[in-house]
Image (tube, rainbow, N blue to C red; front, side):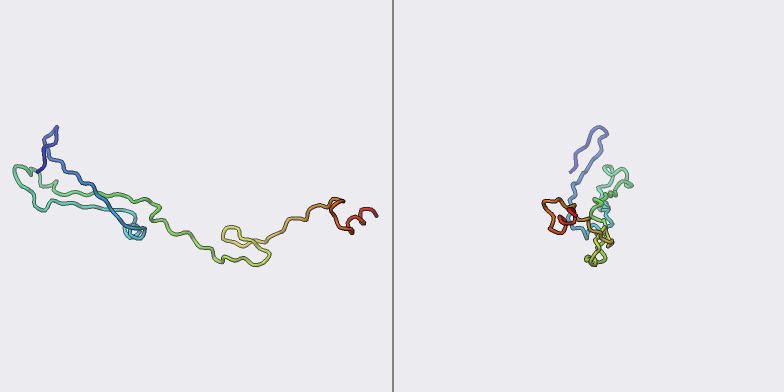
Length: 116
């Protein structure tokens, strides 16, 4: 039996609701949980003075991340030779220029060319 709830001497009934499921369940519900409750056998007068409040509705949005579409896969994960992947595209790859030679680290051809 419910006890009167001050200050207006009305009865208050609360429920804790726990849901379980996975991402597919969330997607099937469009990331929204609707809950309907109805008193099927009200006590009647004098306790049930307003029959219009014998039902209720509650709705809660689930975290949006559960319903986000999966990431778009790459069209072709392998780019042809001399290209590199940038986002979802294969763009031409230009290698960096060779390092400048120092006289103590260059081959004999480079040293001879400097001396000439």
